[in-house]
Image (cartoon, rainbow over all chains, first blue to last red; front, side):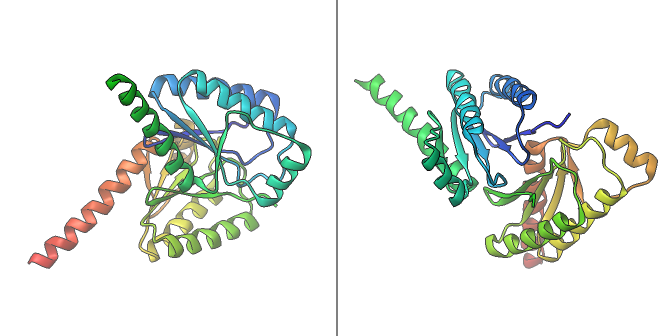
Amino acid sequence: MERIPILKVGQYLLITIQVDLHDKMILALQDELTNMIVKTGARGILIDISALEIVDSFIGRVLAQVASCAKLLDAETVVTGMRPAVAITMVELGISMKGVHTALNAEDGMELLNDILHRDEYAHDFSAIN
Amino acid sequence: MERIPILKVGQYLLITIQVDLHDKMILALQDELTNMIVKTGARGILIDISALEIVDSFIGRVLAQVASCAKLLDAETVVTGMRPAVAITMVELGISMKGVHTALNAEDGMELLNDILHRDEYAHDFSAIN
């Protein structure tokens, strides 16, 4: 069975989606991802979809689901590398990825995660002072 | 056509191989990788093969070729995530990946790249002093 590897890069987990997702793979991915978040204590997930030529409502929903799972475990999800044509199709079809941040490429995605997580820390500190 | 995305992560380039490689994809990968090394000035390439269940002599040769290309452009290549069964098969079949470093997982791979590149810098400094 094909599986999508999850790589720990620095303090984040990185997933590159290159193949068409089907149900079993997604269940396996969610399972492995949640386990890895717990094991590594990762606060950020980066999902690169630059290899995907089509993102339909199914994949949109899957990405939103993965992000929701991650969020429950205190991790933020950023989807990167969306092709222009994919962005247009998603808007035309009204596909939304709730709870998912997006960035142009993996590098920007990492920066976005850094920003989000540091802002969180700052908010924590701030609320502790007041 | 399927393509293998190359992600810039920090100062390194990261490639996850999930699908069976064929000639056209490899040419496209080599082309894109060399271009990205030149464009980004990356000094390290990390290739994760944890999704591959089989590494035959063809893939072994391809990885060695990619590493040689990268080396000519002053970048080191680390292959990570090899499965135990793959390692056994490679030894049994006498497949060698010349010029390719290996590490257990992406995280260790990054550390290895850091070590190699800092050692290089140290050697440069040392030869400059003497």
